[in-house]
Length: 100
Length: 227
Image (cartoon, rainbow over all chains, first blue to last red; front, side, top):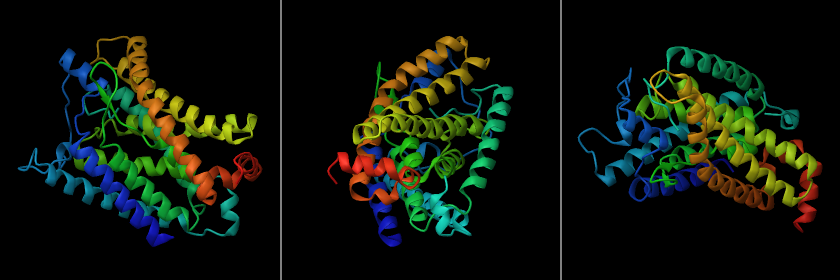
């Protein structure tokens, strides 16, 4: 179960990353549109290492974006496993009946 | 729907951070010790999957785009508390590494997508299936819950923007615009959620949180579905 679920998660995530990067990457959300119309600008207090899911210096290169997306999804999976394991502590048979 | 830094007044940021902190504390307290061995890899898989899903933008109205949230599915499979933690992991990594959503607005984004977008679908689903104990009720609950969750999350984003001075529009206009635009993606989220719940209910009902706490309803759905 454990290994299969992780494997499925990686494969499905890769599929979504490829689809999202190559075919459905154009983002112009309602909020972005309105902000542009009224001239509102973002004022970030933090410089993210990979803005807009792109590696600095490799902007617009689909294969790099797919790699960034995939590695990030695996990273998210790892973080969630660690958090999930921490939440699992002390789980017993009765735990399944609880509202979690 | 990710609100970047600079779009919300600090007072709005503070209130939404306070609300989200309250739900973080509650969720960690309720979820701790309650995730089963099966739910841990499922939580990791769904979190990674919806992180990737949120990279996909679908055209909606007037050339604008939107993405699925994933909140309804994590709520119905992991429960709302673990689901909220799952969405928080996604939103924090998006903000810290990719600048998708701000740091000062993280509380607002977690409130919209992690609290409203997770708890609403769950509560609507539970209410619908309590009244309508059949497979149709199950699918309707999943669809309606996901739809209302998405639209309500967008309307909250509109409310926060409307209350902030940077946007010259009234609260009513901001809430209405966000709600109408995201109702399209809400329909998509509803269809995907109902589809996934149907598949899991048929093949792996043990993975669904509601099947753990609603065994009678699950049996009714199983009979109705001929399983």
